[in-house]
Structure formats: C-alpha cells, structure tokens
Image 1: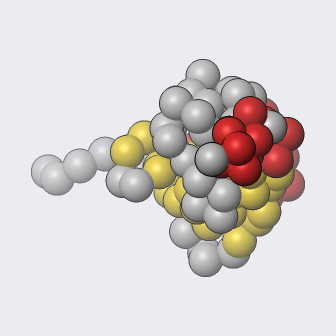
Image 2: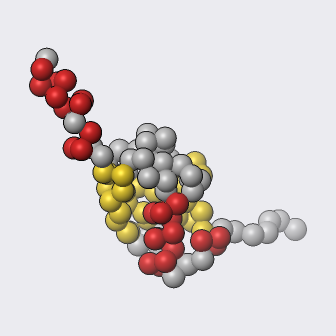
Length: 94
C-alpha cells in the first residue's frame, strides 16, 4: 500500500504527456506538454511549424473541438493521445 501512495504523490512522473497532432494530410507532429498548460501553445506551435494560419484549422480530440484555453488535464488526455487537425471549411449546399 505504501508503494501505491508514493506513485500518487509524485506528480513529476506524470507532469508531462506526449501528444501526437495528426493533420488532414496524415502528417504527424509530436509535442511534449504539461498537463496544466493551455493547448493554445500546442496549437500555435503546430500552425507555425506547418505554415498554416491559426484561423484556418480546427483541432479535434475524440471528435470534439479543442478550445485554446483547454488543458490536457481538463480533457482527460493520456500520454500518447492524438489530436486531429482539420482545415476549416466555409460554405455549404446551395
């Protein structure tokens, strides 16, 4: 029981998680981020690396839109999870 208590009390082991961001072209970019860091940093870094405007893409986790103020902890993300990036589509049917 003491071993269990130790792992729960040491947040440094799980403070960072690795997140994979997958673009619509199936290109994968990997990020290491703190669980409490707003995902805005990851989103901005992805757009900068890919040469895309932040307003031209949408980030989805488990099919739900990721907002810049969300954190991995809020979204209950685990190490190795992936975020999908979709190009924003404007318009509709005629």
